[in-house]
Length: 298
Image (cartoon, rainbow, N blue to C red; front, side):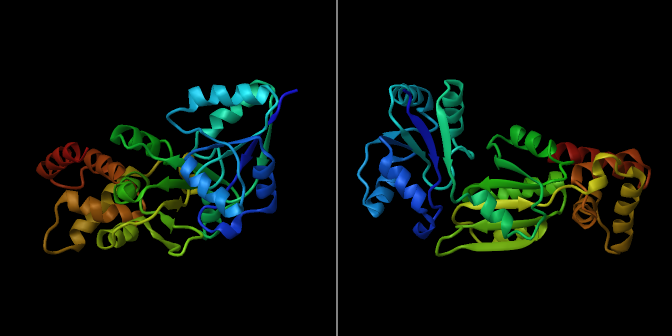
């Protein structure tokens, strides 16, 4: 008779969040598969549990997964844990769970902490419908493809981000999505837990002065309900840029006018560039220079 796979959520910072059921499951499992055995060993020492640990992570999930499944089929029960939070959420545990299901192995969830859900609940943004998007790619092309695919997403969106990539990610989001509301949580349940609720443009200004530290969860408001059915009024967009130029008496380049107008109107910068190029609201030579600027920006 086959054993079982338990997906066991572990604390994301505060060890007080561990449940009695989690303790029992880890104690009763035949072995534990862990993202980082050193991290899990410290947790087990805290719980006074001695158990065999095997490594299962992004770089060995194929070879290690085959061994885990073989042991479960032979009758053993495995508890799968990640370093923090719920296995399978932006985590290779998703693959192991699917492989076990395909092999008719029983898979159970031992619920517990999840950074994405925790950040959503304290964001102040709509939580009835949301989309978890995980980490954006480090590759610029893939990152922009991902964000562009979400421009019309009406649900609240949740992203994970590392501190060294945060400022670049926020800037890319502002360019593609416009100046939306955002809640930024870091170090959830830990000593230096912090949540900032603001707009993308203000967040960028903040982190230009403050070095990002810790792991971040970004919760961003979805697109306006009408955006999927109605295109932007390009003529009105172009006129808005022209009005920005007219209102600043010291003179303003089209490039700067677009940068100012985009967050004010909540319109992606690229969409404004396109509108200005299509509608004759400025001098021809300015339109040509804007085309060059647009190409350089991309």
